[in-house]
Image (tube, rainbow, N blue to C red; front, side):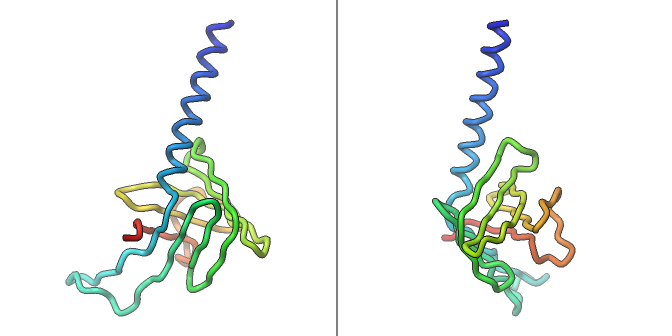
Length: 129
């Protein structure tokens, strides 16, 4: 019984450590990468989405700015993020770090995959340089 409890505690601590590392990796300033056409030239229409995560968040999504607080849960699959704006609106989302990019999908209801029908809640961001 004591061995089972010790293994369970070790597993919880390891998961918490991984979640903490994941939280640290997403903190910072993220911006939309430039969109290129098929020839590799920048497209005329560019996306200006950005997200900054630290003690609080600031975001531009679809031309609208917001700021507030956020929480993450990296123990869930996919990882979860909840943003609460300074106006009291809650956006529930999922996130992943893939290929050096931060993928975030947000909505009033939590998405289950990185798809947005109108592309209004999906952000693919890279670290701001």
